[in-house]
Length: 39
Image (cartoon, rainbow, N blue to C red; front, side, top):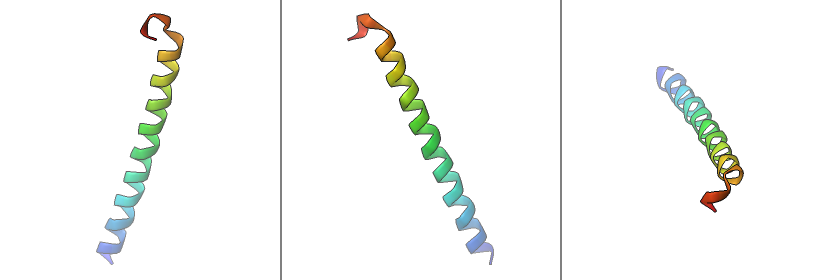
């Protein structure tokens, strides 16, 4: 029982981390598009 619960928490945590990384990547891309001298 505890293993199943722990695995679920780990999966949820990994999924939220993946979403955070994706949003950070989008913000970085947006920032680089705004700054012209980095092209």
